[in-house]
Image (cartoon, rainbow, N blue to C red; front, side):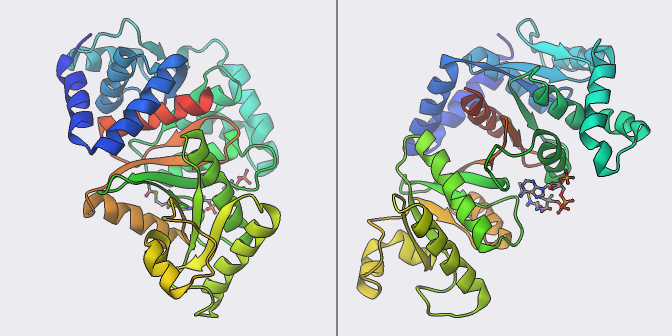
Length: 345
Ligand code: ACO
């Protein structure tokens, strides 16, 4: 399968990253390969998506469905020397179920102020059509957002796919493999701007579930600039309140807070100052007090900290959908698709 350079480069990138990250990603890829799923890419015309699809097929991770103008995809594939034999192309303009899809979207959004004319216009946006494809179970998952501002793909995901039964809201997460090879789960890194205590508690539960799916037993630190009541400011109190909610409702969880990041990651330091803290060893699930903190933290680690960062993963959704960071690398697209396939399994 061509182009060999892309596949070799992806494998080489796996070789170059730290051993824990490599082991984690390889483990996830092997799990995905057991039951590859049909994942639709609304930006199927983009060369990065074509290259990622090539790797996904070659590695047996997913059955990619490239959405877009058939001719454009074929021309671009030829330019990049990509063989489209095992890659499905879906051109929504040729979809024989198009009218049914538009009507279904109208039914869904008519009480949200959307008229039939607007429904037609919204469905002309590939990410909206792709989310409807998932809602209608015509595909197993969606990976979107390469060319758009994050919220432009996030909003249709929230509005069309929605959250799972019993979940009050979605949240965003990143898996961070740090220099010392420790795997950490960060949330919320992309969705809720200023979460209340209930949302923070829900976020902690959702990110812990992701950790467990990846065979990591969660030890949760509820992060703040304050440590166990050193500040009574509402920003600190809401984290303390979220911790209380978690402890009351989920006594089985290993969780404590509010605490500073160094106390979360350095058990000695924590024991010295807060020997009452009920957290054993290093925390591996870090719940941030707001989106500023979560988003800035993962980006700093990505750019300055020498950490390998995988995500953003959308937590709490009804069906498997993930929104890429704009301009993601081919490797990031592949890795997020791996997580989408696992979610679909
Ligand atoms: N979970 C589930 N659904 C939600 C959530 C949530 N947390 N938040 C909003 N929604 C739903 C709403 O119910 C609404 O649905 P409806 O239209 O069917 O009624 C829809 O999403 C839109 O919500 P609004 O409240 O109308 O819109 P808002 O402008 O508040 O958008 C959004 C919500 C997009 C999540 C907003 O909170 C936001 O901008 N978050 C930050 C996103 C961001 O910029 N991330 C960081 C950068 S991304 C990166 O670094 C990769």
